[in-house]
Structure formats: C-alpha cells, structure tokens
Picture (cartoon, rainbow, N blue to C red):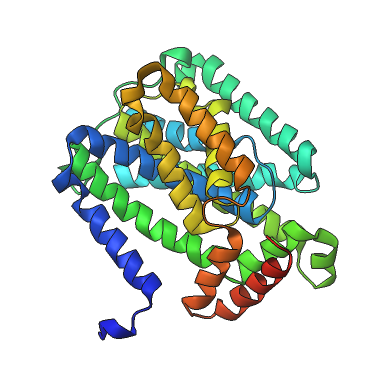
Length: 335
C-alpha cells in the first residue's frame, strides 16, 4: 500500500485508531473506565443522529431503547445463561423490533408532536422497568450480571472490556458513516428538509423513517447490552429522560447530521464532567455554561453537517457525488 495515496482524512482516522488502541497503556484504570463510558455515549449519540440529526425526527425517548437492550441482555444472561454475544444480539434485535413497531404510529407526526409522543414512550418504559417487579426487580435493579465472556475467556478487567468495546464501536461508526452518506442517508436528509418534495421525487417517506427508527434503536440496544455487562448492575435510574436529553445535547453540540461532529461532541461531553472534577461543586455549572455558549454562538455544532458532507465527498466512494451535491446545497443555504 502506497501511503502517499491515502487521503489526509484516512491518515487522520488511522492516527485516531492507533491512539485509541494505545490508551490503556498510557492512562490509569479509572481513565480507561471513563473512556469505556465515552465510547458507549458515542455509539448512542450516533444512533440518535440517524433518527434526529439526519432523519429530522425529534426523539426524546432514546434512553428507553438503551434500557430495553440493557434489560433484555441482562435478564437473558442472568435467568437463561445466554452466552454474552447472543445476549448482546438479543438486546439489539428486541430494541430494533420495538423501534420498528413504535415508528409505525409515530412517523406521521412531526416536530413537537413527535417529541411529546417519544417522550411519553420513554416514560412508559421507565415506569414498566420501575414497577414490573417480578421481572425487572423494580428499583432494586438487576444484580448478578456475569462478567462478559468470549469463547470461555472472561473479560474481567476494564482494559479487556475497553478493547472489546473498540471491536464493537469501530465497525458501528464505520456503518454509521457509510449509512449517513449513502443514498439512504441522502434520502433521509431530503425527507428532513421537505417531506412533500421528497415524496414527489419518488422517495417512500414512511419506509425510510421506519428503517431509520429501527436502525437507531437497534444500535442503542446493542450498546445498552454492553453497558449492562460492563456495569454488572442496572436499575431504572440508568435509563431516564435525563439520559435522553444528554444524548440530544451531544448530537446538537457535535453537529446535527454530522457523523464526525457527533462523535467529537459525544466524546467531549462524556469526559467533561470528569475532566472538570478538580473544580468540585462548580464543574456542572461550568459544564452547563459551556454547553449554553456553544449552542448560542455556534448552533451548527463543532463540525457542521456541511463540513462533514465535504469530507464524505472528499473521501471518495459511490456516495461521494451525492455528498458533494448535498454539501453544495447546504453551503448555498448558509448552513
């Protein structure tokens, strides 16, 4: 392979991957644990980006799908001793299936009506987790979740779980990148901008919306399952409305519709509370002020959708022409 033929974007991606692989060798176990949570939030924010950032469907119940995946994987493992990978897959499939079913009655709703509906769904799931004591143990949560195990090898340390998270996260992010800038992603962006115009172009609006919901919910469920095994204990407090708002903040902060922007925004907002810990009681105030100023002064986010479309066009591939055309439209629109 001739390294001179690689684009700067590919080289930067390779450098980031190398840095991610070296993290456990350079930092303390506590920092590795923070990086694991940052990785989970990156995946969750990207799943919401497909639905909200690219699809334009304001979903305030994303934590519900995260929780459904976590509880499904945990319950199947604790009560039926399902192997780790199968439990993760089951969490993803159940979340994707419920996302698919929920999408049908909600896809005709827009804006605040869709937001209220998804908020209500999130609250219903939260109440079920809290009150269905015979299955979920209510506020006591699920205990005794075993260590993750791959082919007989237990992932007991944070370092081994970190590397397994990378093995899950990297293909997920690659899929999110390809999906976001493929013809599927471009159709979703067209629907977000103007449903009627998209429909006149022959785009099946309802089908694309349902698929976006199912994909986003499935990714959230997959990483919900990972979180359950990593934490070894889950309770309804892990999947509240506050988590949905945190994910929404990450998408807006990073850049709606921008996959690299959402990755960066999710990482910064996930590690910021720990990075500001030296400020003691003032850290959450400063965290909130920084978030407020960022949204006020740069509403397009850290890496805007236009920039990310130009990067996608620059990186080549089948979708590059579509991404370039979309970037031109965004640039003319001043976004």
